[in-house]
Image: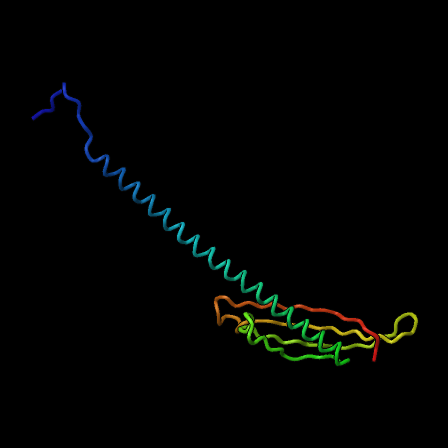
Amino acid sequence: MRPDPRRPQRSQGFGLVAALFLLIVVTLVVIAMARLSAAQHGSNSLAIQQARAYQSANAGLEWGISLSLSSGSCAQGSPTLAGSNLADFSVNVACTSSNYLDNNGVALQILLFTSTAQNGSPGSRSDYAYRQLTATIEKGAP
């Protein structure tokens, strides 16, 4: 049978192609959004851990400075952060002391504190964070 020339021919199957194309595009958009969401979540988690590492190292500096000023000698060690939200961080405080004479011949003591905070060891955790802070204190020599 020949098609009737007076009757327009209809294209069949075009709707299926358009639906498949739309389905593929929507699937790719959903996959891209899911990957972006996962990357954003990981980035936020790491930023929070870095902020916590900073606060842990800062707490170590304050501990070392306070102990040194009250005792008169260079204090170092590992303060405990148990009972706080920073308990999973290990903090180590080191202190070096130097004695100097200023231009007027007055004896001064310079204390250099280094506080290191980290949670775990590198490569052991996906949210590993490390921070090291230093502070210098000048006081009259004992």
